[in-house]
Image 1 (spheres, rainbow, N blue to C red):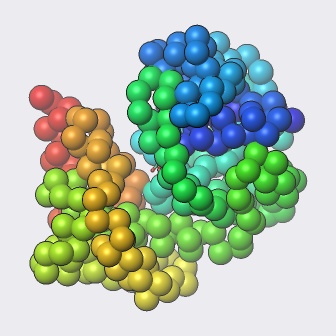
Image 2: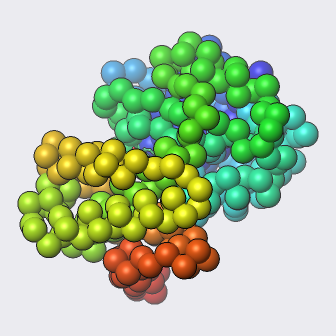
Length: 303
Ligand code: NAD
């Protein structure tokens, strides 16, 4: 059972490295030259251990895989899968645990919906330098298939992940969980990216705190209009918990802005506003955040 991890940054390295240590036949695929060369030379530096997992540039790939786990940033998925097209056979399952609403749509351009597996993960990970990744804390992956009957690979995944110390469950409500995570990220990531503030500062200031809750409300209303039964109260509790306990956390979108990298704003706020417009749902705050972060991305790209 051959597994490829497409995009071996923070999350790809965590999942790919763990699967390799758990005995899976796994290959990382990435186009970051310094990162790939460092892993080849020294192994993947995961803090207390080095993991000598195989790693390829996309141009070097010549196998057909049983499972491709996509862990690029959402806006790079299409380009990454296009380069890998000849490695996707009729029975290859594509799995996305990326953030954002459009992963199912993009993956089904490359595989039958029955072979497209989607979900979310709450595992955290960071890249600390070329070939160096860090992950603190436990998490879970919640998985489902985009079409019926699901690829038999879906049933294999909880066991495959468990052998690698990763917690994964098949969850028929995983699409609602994707929306809940998008609501949470839409509320926090954009506000932090625009203000430069950590999560606790957004929560400590009355106006930004209120804006965050308005965004959750707009995203939940949109999700319900799209047919997903979200529990607004549950997302509000997640947000309040983050304000209370993740005070110094700088969400990935703020880290991307600081580093001058493009953000995932289109996959989060952009995807919500597009669906809201199609259904006549008003999303004034989410739309404003989208416009401002688009401006930041545009000015970084044209600098
Ligand atoms: P990352 O930027 O650390 O890694 C992305 C990797 O993809 C990079 O190494 C990059 O070089 C590679 N890449 C880009 N284009 C490529 C291409 N065409 N072919 C091959 N590789 C390519 O990102 P990340 O933090 O690992 O996040 C990945 C996804 O997981 C995102 O959607 C993110 O929102 C989501 N996520 C992240 C976390 C986290 O804690 N980091 C948690 C949950 C979900």
